[in-house]
Length: 492
Image (cartoon, rainbow, N blue to C red; front, side, top):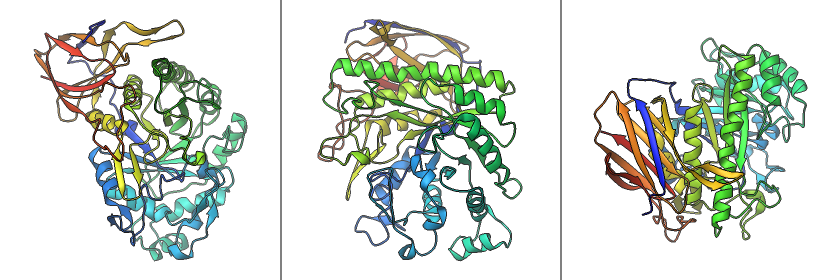
């Protein structure tokens, strides 16, 4: 193994930074392709083993990585979703056409009650996205009352009649989605006024108010963060931000999910690492307009986005998932940890069968992706206390396509253990790690590694276990990691 990169990391175990909120590891489940239907919901009568309609293999897999939060029903779908169409007897719910994603029939058999049952089965929290784009203030306010009402109002009693006595718990509530685009093609000033109007009427019982999320900007844009944080003075807990990693940067020819070259690998790493600067710039705007730190930045859509596979419906956004995606996920985790004081919630797009998914299904078959395994390795960072560190590393690439060869995270877990995460972005050269640690005598690193020989190593339905984390142990005197690898270890 070549040791082309020398990486020096220095920290004091007694120093403490912000807590890495567990919701940084949130998921996104939109009514899109087979993300909900088949991916999560198969119905009680399905031959696929299920619990009250939710497929058992997917439930068990998601519980294993401790999914903390699920965002639903969209995305672009949210601003066409009318909640009343998804309650009551399933065989009486209207069938609509999903005009955003594939023009397929939307049976509405997965609605409000099913969503909350799903997150409760997972032990996760709920992030509900309301319809501002094609809905009304009254519609959104009545949905919130239906979900959270405690007393004997008509709406609360309707929820009870539909099988749910106790109110639902909402952790986050989004007031619209991508108002700059599919959510209505609005100006941020106009959306700010709408937001204030809608938020005024979203009433919940005392102590049950969710965190309200304003629909913010995307990519290099900071205008939305600036306008919203300057003009919305109450009923706001965070501003959303979206960024997708396209290897080419071109929405018309994004790049391939498999069979890609090293140049495409480098382009992907370069594109994904740009989120560091984009988050930095948006956080700087928040520091200016909200110096007390009350308004957070929620990266509630992120991940890789490739060209659709030729044999798939392009509207379903189904893509294969490789070692490259696992490295991308880990790079983003380390960046989110860096900004953990302001970035307290993110949702990868998406959970099952869509874009950078945790899980792929084909009828009764299920496969866990490399991205899934990265989430599993990083779950020790949920609610961990970050430890500030200094890192010196060489670069991978050159010119305007140059990124750090290795990125890292250091934190004290809720179990009291000291964890280190390392990601080697270089697909050819390994790295030698030199730790300079004050405050503790550490001698070894013990944990797991995810790596492979091929750039596009992946799991398939025919070979579902080709790429999995392997045990990793190293002396801190001889601490090397291979090329294109994700490593998470406890330092002892």
